[in-house]
Amino acid sequence: MYSAKKILGLIGRNVGYSYSPYIHNVAAEILQLPYYYTIFNIPSPEVVPAALEGAKALGIAGFNVTIPYKKTVIACLDKLSPEAKAVGAVNTIVNDAGTLLGYNTDIAGIVIPLEPHKTMIAGQPVGIFGNGGAAMAAVEALSTRFKPSAIHLFTRTKEKGRTLCRHFEKRTPPISFSIHPFDDYAAIGSCKLLINATPIGTKGIDSGYDNSVIPPGTGVIQRGQVVFDMVYNPTETRLLQIARGAGAITIPGIDMLVGQASQSFEIWTGKPMPVESVKNKLRQLLKANNRLS
Ligand code: NAP
Picture (cartoon, rainbow, N blue to C red):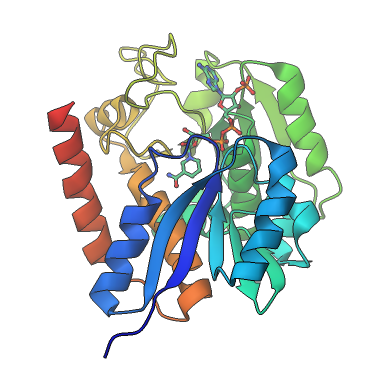
């Protein structure tokens, strides 16, 4: 029987590149659920409140939120989940009959692929490259679920690293932070888990780092480490190639992308996303797109 579809969408700026519409529309199609996911490019933060008021009036079912509005939307929401409150950022909104609820599923997107390595990480030092929103979600995920002995932050600007640490300074037990430059190879080598939470390695971005936060030839990555690259395009980044070559365990960004999407999908629809089918289709799409460009 035909039924009109409920609308979901991604709020961000210049989000035409996003794979979220593909992920959610494929999942809805596989499960035969009446949802259609699209993108909403919002040019500036002043427009966000009007956009969300309009969404309530139109009965839009929910949103993902991406750069640069993950913090901006909070002032327009009626209630936040504990995770969204903890990091001060929202990537998922539900419109519950005019009440807007904010969630952060980026944290679950980090937890899900790390879960099989939990016992390896507990009590060991971990390293995060970057000091932005994704690095913050990684700190939240690691400190609350994986109990590492210390978090080494690798940043290009020490002060920005300090700002991130200050956000978590009231945690009990306290998080043991230290801040390092990208080329502190002794600190990198001491970490059981390394997470790249910068865009370095993304297709089409020339970062000046030879496409990897840890350049090839340093020999710093070893067997027994876990290397998690949040970058998902290409699926096999330079960092992951280097890590695999060194015998480390690798986690690709696509696992986080589909992990966070699966949590948002379930919040909106009440149904679990068919994760493996969606991931396989997305992998094929990314490969095909990269062959064409
Ligand atoms: P963000 O808030 O803009 O933060 C970006 C971080 O990367 C900042 O710490 C920035 O340093 C650093 N950075 C950027 N370019 C750099 C360069 N050339 N050299 C050194 N550091 C650089 O972005 P975000 O939301 O945290 O996202 C970070 C990355 O994670 C993005 O590539 C994003 O696509 C990816 N991500 C993936 C998923 C997924 O599902 N797989 C989810 C979320 C994010 P400064 O502060 O010094 O500029």
